[in-house]
Length: 115
Length: 107
Image (tube, rainbow over all chains, first blue to last red; front, side):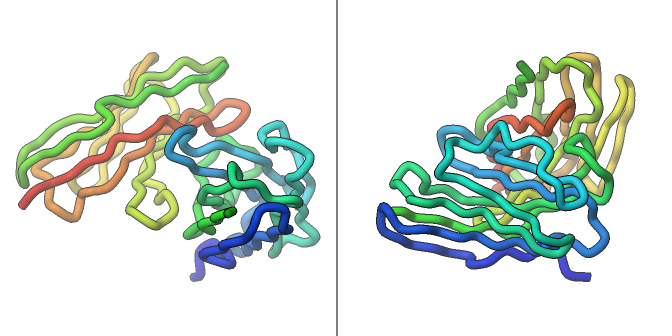
């Protein structure tokens, strides 16, 4: 069975450009999470969805970040406009049970570099 | 605010040399403590969930234990393929991750 799928795996863009990261969760999973990982701050939760509905977006850094989940098999994280400090690895994870306090399964990540 | 502190930051062992990684936490309403393994360039891989003090879980050379204030990941007779970063996370309102312990096993 396929795990969490993320695309692209690598993204290099210039400051000010729009960036869209994509995620396909494990089929049948009810919760989806977006994380950001940096050396300085480690792994941080940005936002999570239960049954396609955003539940907690308190980790989203600012209004430049937005996330959507139009259906159970697809989610996007958009950064507009991008800035160099957004450079990080972005992970998507999904969980069978609803809510953040259960085991989560992570995708391979998207490495974003903003120059 | 929920906090997770892992120690040591890095650990280098010889193959077969057993040791333990520590995860100390403060959380309001623990709903689970999680251990993950992360290899370079990959996403974290789920290992264990512990729910209550005194609980233990085992998988191959790894054993995780839990008390009211900390968790240990014991590695028995490790092999080079056990080299990775091990992440601990506590679940309450959300998963809060520690900074990880980077483990290197030399052959």
